Each structure stands twice: as C-alpha cells, then as structure tokens.
Image 1 (cartoon, rainbow, N blue to C red):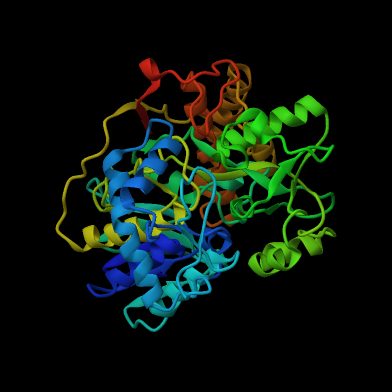
Image 2: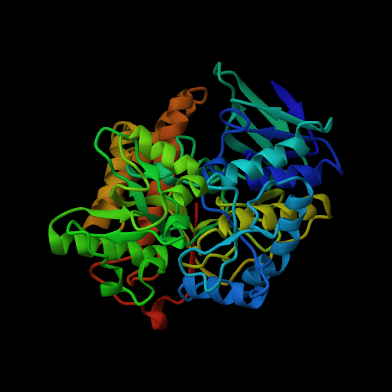
Length: 513
C-alpha cells in the first residue's frame, strides 16, 4: 500500500493528535498507529495535567518547580515555553469540552502532586489522559483531511538525499506499505516496555526512538528513566499504577508495621520527587526486610471512592480495598526523559523529521520529569511541531551536547526473545545501577543488536521481530548512556557514584549511528 500526504504522524497520543488538528488546516494528514486508533500512553495517564491556572500560581513558580525536579539539566528556554504556553492550551481543551473536575464554586479543582509547591494539576477523576484523548479525537475524527490507519506499525522513515520524506509500515496482515510526505512527525510515546516491570501499555516499546536512531538522528539523555514509586504489587494480579495524585490527596507510604517512613529519608516526605521516593522505598524495604505499602485508611472512604473510581475498581479486581487496605507497592519504569533530540519546535537533526511528546528530548524535563508535566508537554510541543512542519524548512538549533558515535552493529548472538531483554534491563539498568551490571547489560545488548541487524532484511514484515528490534535498540541506547554517566542525578542512580557531579557531568550527551 503506497500513500501520499502532506504530513505523516506516527502515533496517536496527545502530541500526535494535537499536531494533526493544526496540520489539517494546511494539508492532508496520515496518522499511523500501531494498535487501535485510541490506544496510546495518553489514555493511561491517571493523575492529571499541570498548568499555572490557579490564583496562587504563576508560570514562574511552575518553571521553578520544573527546574528543581529536573536536577540541574532542564533547558530553561524549553521550560519557559512549556509553562507560559501551557495555560493557553489547557484552556483550549476546556473550550473544546474537556470535563475536568470542578470544585463547589464551579472552578477547576486543582490537585497537588510530588515536587509541586502549589495545587496546579487539573484532573478528570483518575482518568485524565482518557478524557483528553476523547476531546482530541472528537476534533480529529470528523476532519476529511485526516486519514487514520490503525494496526499500522511504523518500521522505518523514508530517506532521500539526506532528508526524511515519509515512513514505511506493516499492517496487521503483514503487508508492507509506505507513506510519502513533506514532513514526518514521530509521536510514538515512550519505551517503558524495555523493562520487565513497567506502568506502560504493551505498545510502549521505543519504536520512534529506534526508528530515528537507525535513520541517523541524534538521541540524547537516555540514561534518565523515571521509575514511578507506587505501582500495585499484589500476587497474581497485573501491575497497576497508583497515581501520585493519591499522595497529593493525603495517601501515605507505610512500612510493615504501619509506620509512615518517608520523613526519615526526605524533608518533603510523601510528596518528594519520584526518584527520591522510589529510592527511599527501596531503602526502607532493605531496612525492614519487608514490603512497603500505600495507605489511604485515614481518609474518608466516600471521598476516596469518588475521587479515584478507576483506581478503586482496579484494586477491587485485585482483591483489595483502596480506601481501607494497605496496598503493597514497588517502583516500576514509567517515563523516559531522554529521546530523539529536538529543538523547541520539534525539529530533529534530520531535515523533514520532527518529534514531539515522550519520544522527543527537548530538555524540558532535565534529569527527572515533574509530575503531570507530560500531558502538558504533548499539547504544547505537539502544537509547536505542527506549526514548524507547516512553515518553511529551517535548520534546527539543538542544545549544546557532547555527541558520540555508536559503532555499527556486527553479527552477534542469536536473536533474543523480548522477555529476556526486558528482564536484563530491569536487573542491570533499573532503579539502582552499577558499573559491573551495566557492563554486563551493554555486552549482551550489543551482541543482540548485531543479531537484530543481521535478521532485519528477512524479517521486514514480521511485527514480532520489530518489537524485539525496538526493545533491543532502545535498551542498548539506555544502557550505554547509563554506563557512561559516572554520577547520580535525577532518574539515574549509580551505586558506585552516588553523588551529583556538576563539575564533570552537568551536560547533555547525544548518541548517533
């Protein structure tokens, strides 16, 4: 199947849909989505979307919180764009019919989450991402200029004379296709499935990251992976994210004896940033030799059920009561701060190729994303990328980075299965890292990368192969970056280099093939 359009978007989450709405005014848009059209990381976002819309808030305060959470590596210009443009795009969602929760006076009910200094998180109960996706799809679906191809797995971008001119894909039946376009947007979301334990849906395998890297684009800051601290860990039940909004409304982390413990480790207690909370949980579990739990038992059960119906239902299906029981929790991979390096308008290092949302690295999150900034990033930078795609070609101004070349793959071991890769990443490149474990991971991943490269010509229509290929490629890039950075900062923690080292490592490092 060969198609043409003015613009092609790979992915159907918040960044891709917001871009499509803007692009449809300027040309024909083709959206490739690897699963059903409504399946994306956006729909799984429980907590909310942060924006400085409250009477005690300001973009400057939001920027300050974002920079502090980013642990010294945020790009100040990108942060300024996020926090100043954010309220406008959130109000746009409200105008389009987003049903965010309201207080008794009819104003937006603002929640507070970890590392936010004020209440600034808008939410639709505990299914905010799903509500935003609903509103955006209502704008996309009627447009005669937007064509959505479901079950279309993007496999590569098309390159001609050094520029991106579209994308190749494989449909559910294994039939290959191509879409040629004057500009291509990667909006594929994250790579949580690279790790055995994750909050991400099955589709989040780092496809966009792998596609861009193979085409020669720069990727940056991939050592910085955020592990969400509170993921339900009930025997025989699937892992399920327990939103940070729970702690924002008063939930507490407690140990086996029922004692709150976060103040022992962090002055901000339960509302410290995610990296700090996750590591404090590990330290407490090691100290007591027992699991840690999330408890809402001290809160009004009626409030808990009304505010968090989706989470309460998931807990009920696992055999526990959110309002009354202690819920066993542990960290899991949640969000990748790094990605395909872009400027503030989504331009990558390859002409014609753009990226927005979690797959991109604008520098806005630094080493650790502030809670509920991800949906806002998708809105703001999805819209900015669309404006740049419509405009005349402009060379990107990328951040000052140290750029390293990754050697081309050699023939390696036999092709691995995805679960073996994910298990290795969790054990060796997870929450706590060390030189020995990272060396082991890089060695195995390099060999597997060679096997993937060797098998690629004969497996172009095999969707299972492409899943393994993306997981291996993204895993190798994350592990290489983690081994290289000999310090601890934000989501990256090295047991052998536990301190932050601004003298040597207050910098960004980009990789390219």
